[in-house]
Amino acid sequence: PALSEVEVAEAGCGASRREVVSRRVPGRPGKLALVGVGRRKRVPNKALVRALLVRDRCCQMPGCGRTRHLHAHHVQFWSAGGRTDPDNLILLCGSCHRSLHRGEFSITAHGNQRFTFHRPDGAEIEVAPMTSKPPEWQPNPRINTDATVPVGGGRMDLGYTTEVLYAVWEWKAHSATRPEPVADKAA
Image 1 (cartoon, rainbow, N blue to C red):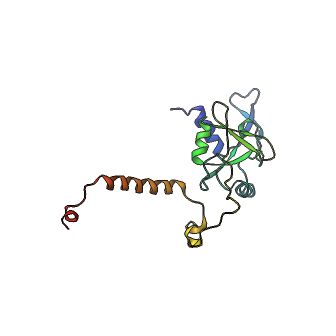
Image 2: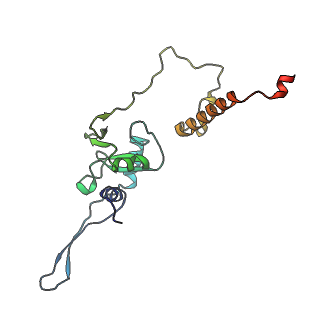
């Protein structure tokens, strides 16, 4: 089956291509003359990708924060004249990139590397404010500093953390409904 428009747009967003312009040669049916070969680059070079990683550090969809498998996305599609520069590029993880192309949200570029995200109804998706500690807050001195730092010093993996907490919750709920062993009652 043919690809849908959404699939073509998504593939075009991640593929490299070159536009070739040709015209028919008069008097020679089926013969084409090459007029030009597009030279504008759609794919950002390594330096630009590094700059985006320094600027964005993670998927920019509010609430996501993934740091792996990031795609440099043209906010104004390259096929529609969007430029390959930091004012028009934003990092998205693969899942959010696919969601964007399916129309689950949209992004607006405001220049100066500022972007807003919108729901399909046009409402802005707000970025959660940064959390801050109260000025009088002090860490508990009985807790070693290495106890609060993730292995490798990276960000917390929210998906894994949620999975573990859910498994513990499920185990406790299951344990609470089990009858006590008979041996404990006899003692």
